[in-house]
Image 1 (cartoon, rainbow, N blue to C red):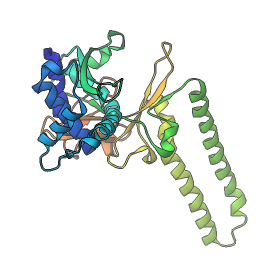
Image 2 (tube, helix red, strand yellow):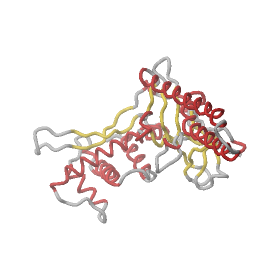
Image 3 (cartoon, rainbow, N blue to C red):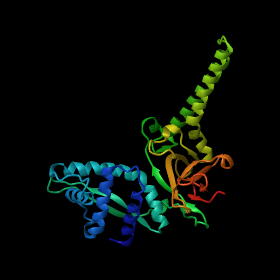
Length: 326
């Protein structure tokens, strides 16, 4: 086990403490795998079995263990692993950024070796170390920090559910993705036009001033909801980053952003759904991104959750840096 492998595991252990969206079973499994990798480095390359992981989970969680029924071990570990893989995919980018900040040249990945030939060859689970791809190296994100500046990290890159699936975790603005994006723009524009067209027609059918006021209020409320719910998706092409509309915000957090990546001519442009955080240098609280107000209107600003009015920082999503705002 090399030194960078150990440092990678330490980064994960530290970050687990702040992952309030990590389900319990994947959390137990991840902690068990880290424990086994550090305690038995000679087995890391081979991997650890269902039984070893289940026993370690019980050892680390004596008050809330998984049980010892051997008949259910394979299913418990396999289901937990699938959920862990899904969770890992949204945290991996941020983990790589933190590794680069610590001057690591690679990071660990989750690996499962599926058994073949029946119960005598159980599946094995492990971390495997892989060097970073130099072709995808983002030099601009390695800009040295000036005194007082902070570094933001990607906390989540996730795949939406329900209506938000039209964006997936990355909307590729090419082919059908480009057609869908601009078709939706036309449809929403047509809806706004039809609502505006209803104003002169509808006013002639209102018998009293009260009815006219009620009618106009209804139209403008609908227009406002359309603007509030969809305008960030279209503004992001020009601004490059916007706070995601309410229907793209999950229940546990409300500070997700839409990020436009201009990749041409190398590849198609994309829109991603991300969340950024940092640590406040004043109080060690978590900094999240929100729309700026008053003197910072029109900007995205980092707010410390401990003192959101006083501990304010600028937010540069491209460099992932911020400076104190006085």
